[in-house]
Length: 358
Ligand SMILES: Cc1ncc(COP(=O)(O)O)c(C=O)c1O
Image (cartoon, rainbow, N blue to C red; front, side, top):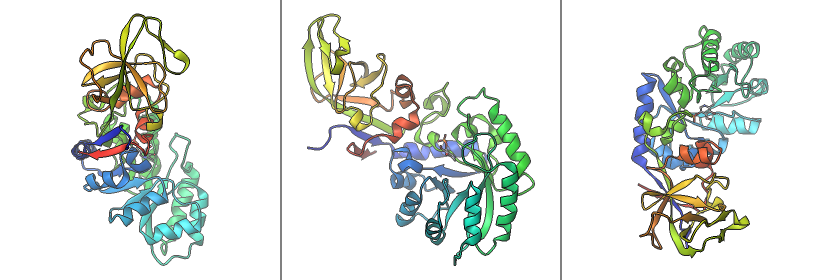
């Protein structure tokens, strides 16, 4: 028997969200960020719907090669860059554009003996202090890469915003100013905006933008939902009721007996759990939609099962449809109840969950 839980992927929502990104980009070109298996939605499935993007970005050589194998001839930016000569040869051969974020990668290129030339993206650390070169290393690397014209066909520049999910954080403006100051005199093919930058700071667009989360219909801001920003959720995570039973006042439910029935009541069991990618640590106010109406989770989320309070659901029956997140129940809301971010929930939907494309 196949697993009951499934996700629905609304392909037209992907195309709609890309159009929203384009509107915000105001003429800048769009690199659709589809790393981590298209934020859990399926790498090539997502790429297919986002064909109109000017480029794709992924995090690993594997993903870049999968896109090429599936026939996508878009520019592909490889965020993590390459670790060794073997990876370098692989990506050069497939015309994949690595991010150069560390001096060792410049040295690798200087030693490379390749038959093809390819574009690179040089990364400046403007204040996130994760990947990227400091200003002195960045300028030095830029000048060295310029001289490697038998390997490097051209150089584009990028950086990454640390806190663009918080519209009130002054760090974003400082990062933008720094990026412009350091790169402005070097080249006019630059990129710093993620979804939050793109939607919150129009001046962050430069020549290329790199939206990820918003393409999946999810708000990049802690104080808004996707729908507030004209985004449409792409993923709906669903399952069905597989048991209904009566509880007596005082009965305790599930592992650890964390929920105690305050009175006689009915409960349902649904076929989803942390083994499907639903977060185990949701707070007691977390709801799902049962036949489209809110129903509260009771007791602990287990690997395959979740229990629901059927108060107000007198007509509930076996087989009824339950939405864990999706239209009507934003993944942003579930993430907040789980003390995490929507990125994590989308990325961790398990392989055993079936996928239906709409
Ligand atoms: C370097 C880089 N650029 C762009 C993005 C897209 O960010 P977001 O999904 O917030 O739009 C990411 C995602 O983490 C990233 O790592």
